[in-house]
Length: 491
Image 1 (cartoon, helix red, strand yellow):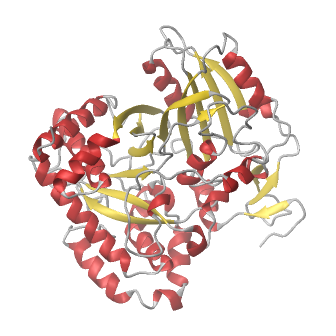
Image 2 (cartoon, helix red, strand yellow):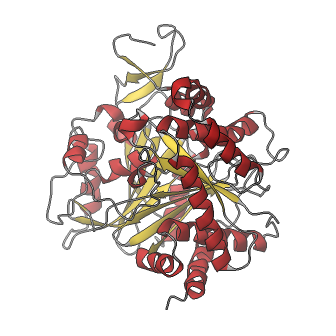
Image 3 (cartoon, one colour):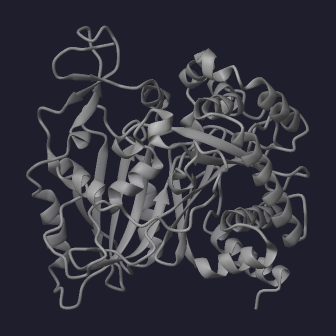
C-alpha cells in the first residue's frame, strides 16, 4: 500500500475501473439535468449560472484528485491531487445549434459522453448548455466510475439542490462544503426500486451500475473472505441450480445471443424520456407487482418490439442484470463519499412471451427468486455471488470471445431513486433528470431510470453503431406501458 505524502491509495474496484478503460469503453457515469429559469431571469441567466460555477473558489477534495503511477509509487495506481487544477477545463459553457430541440441536446450529450476523461486531470466535467428553443437550461455532468458509483453520482448532482424556490447563493456540486450540506440535508428518497428482504440491502440506494462493476479483483476479494463465505454453500447450490436451468435469480450462466452482445465502438447515442410514476404504480397495484417489476416489463416489451423490427428477436428469453446497492456501512464502503459496493439480481425478461401480462408475471417471479437468494446471504456473500454471476461477462470481453460463447445476460437495467418533490438551484426549477451510463464490450445497451417529482426518467445509453435507431425504444416503452395498463385493467 502506497503511503507517500500527497498520494492516496485507490481501492481495488476503482483500480479495476481505471484499468478496464479503453477508447471503445470510457468508464464514466453521467447525468443530464434540465432546469427552467425562474421568472424574470433575464437573457444573461445561463451565463451567470455558468460563471457562478466557474468562479467556485474552494473545490471539494474528491474533484481535485487524479490517478497517477510512477517509479515513486512502485508502479501502483494512486490518487494524487492536481497541483495545476484548471477549473475552466472542467466547467464548460456550450450552446445548441438551431432549432434547439431536445433532439439536438441528446445528440450533444451522446457526443460528450463518448470522449474519455484524461488521467492527468481530475476525472470529471460539467457542461452548462443553453439554446433550447423552449428556454430551458441543460447541465450535463460526467464523473469517472473510479470516483463514484451511480447512486453517489446522482447524490452529488442533487447535493446542492433545495426544495425552496427562493433560496439563492447555492454552491456547485463540486464546491467544498457541498458534501457537508448533503449530510445535513438528507434528500427525500422516492419510490424505492426494489426492497430486498435481506437487512444488508438498501432499496433506497439501488445504484446505476454497469457490467464492469465486476473486476477480476472483486472475485478474488469476495471469495477470499473464507469466514464470511463459509455460510454460502447452500445458497450457492440453490442459485447455481436455477442458473443452469436458466430460471435466473442471483446468477445467470447463459442468455441468448442478441445484437447487444458484441464488441462496441467508442461512439455513444443517448435517448431519454419521462413517464408519470402514478401510471406505473397503477399497473403494479392492479397486477400485484412492484413499480420496479413494471419498469422491467416496460423494458421487456420494448426490447421485444425493437428486436422484432430488426428481425433479431431470440427465441429464448433475454436476461437482464439488475444492480442492487449495498449499505455503505455494511458493505465496508461509504458510497456517498466515493467508492463502490454492489450486488445484483439476474432477471428473466420473458421476451419470448407475446402477452404483456405474462411477461410481467414472469419478471415479478424472477425478481422474487433473486430476492430470496440474496435474503439468506451476508453483504460479503452477496458481493461474492454477484462476482460469480458477472465473472463470465468480464472474461469473455477480455478474451475477445463475443459472439463465440453465449453471454450470461443481455443488458443492464437499473433504477435509482430521487427526490419526491420539485427541487431548485438558485431559483431554477429542476424539471428533468436523466442518468447517462456505461455500455461495455459485450453489453452495448444500458438502461437506467431515476424517479423525480412524480416522474420516472429513463436514460438509454448505447453504442452508436451496435444499437441502431436507439430513439425508437422510447416509442416502444410508451407503447408497452399502455399495453400493460390495458392488460391490468387500468383505465
